[in-house]
Length: 248
Image (cartoon, rainbow, N blue to C red; front, side, top):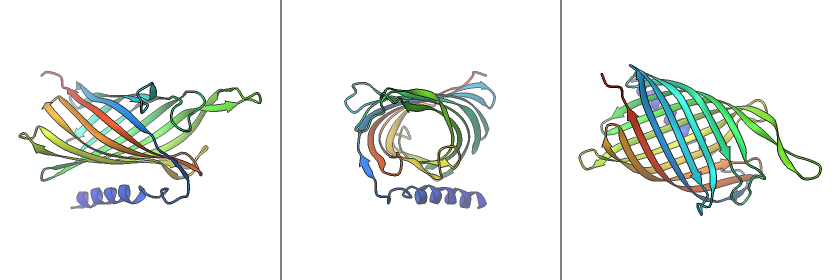
């Protein structure tokens, strides 16, 4: 009972904080993108897994990269309802959209996370709590107007994702999946407590076997870019989920 109450409180936190920054008066830009994601686990030994994510994100016309991310990590599956992980993210953001960066900027991030899961009838819930230590390239503009980078800016960020899925057809081969994720800036460095971004996803996937799932969905991103500017972006998302277990 206590565990169910805890999960319910997490869900309310996610839904409640989502709109903190939405009411502020800002200029809101809109973009449309294509996001491709591959996420997988490779079993190393017993409950230890090498986890990796690869994100290739393209501009609305698929003329070039919007962003790409590589996220390796090590995960320990303590039980069916609890896993912990730690890893590294390399992220590069390219000039794109209606208010583009003058040059491409990269970010190196260390992260630690806990994932809790539970099941209610046919619904499977996953709650991921992640803490990040971010090292983002500092953009500088010279007196002559030239742009470049000078070192890195350090900030922290907290993320909470609530994901739910359930089978809907073909003898539990086809699933519907939805998630909402909050990204919250932690005070310190150059940031104050604020909503960095919010992601909402709705889609479905086909489970070919225990180790491979392919899915497609739509995603909405609210991205807070300061006191006066924000983005409201829509993406088509293509997803590959895989799991490779060692043979016993």
